[in-house]
Image (tube, rainbow, N blue to C red; front, side):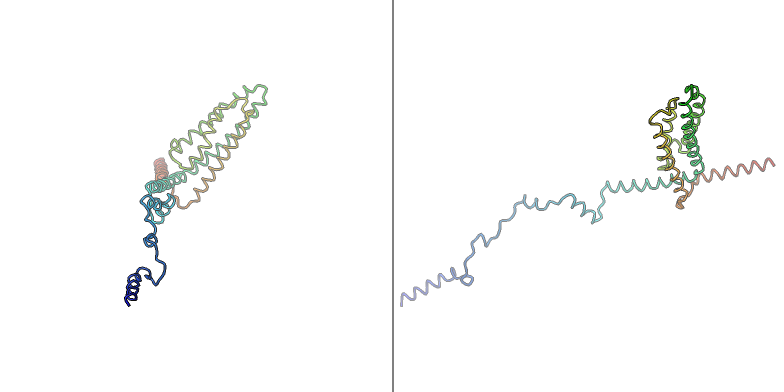
Length: 238
């Protein structure tokens, strides 16, 4: 009887230890605790986001950097100024078109005369006969574009195109010589200048058809004032 009581006591004492959890295998302390916590360096590494991802998130949130804001303002200002320059050109289309037409005529005459110089018995004499007039016409055209553009200040993108005409023309004027026709660069120079003239004249047409452009008020006022002045003079003469 004493032995039976001892076995019962031992089973009661050991039961909670070996039979916990329905008699299953007891987990180790490491398993119960779980994986070790990451150190600070690991957490920082995981929290890093690529620059591309940051830019994407900022864009989606509507964030605009100072550089982007400055670029936007610059673009808007440029657009505003270009509109004013196009209106300036529109008020003077007649003068601009006369200028490009005269330039084409000059190029044709230079091409024609340079052929004569090379074929003449005395190339220098033939050159001297025509060169002075050609040079004067080239310089007059340069003066006209300077006046129209106010020394390159006015005209915007149209003036940029015209620079591709008149800068090479100035170089061509300097290069005029009895043997110009034999110069290998001469034909290409003529081709390039004529292509730039085509581009400029296409720009004139585009500006003319652009109904959003209003001819410069200053130019319109000046023309109106001149017309009124002429009418007044005519009245006095009568």
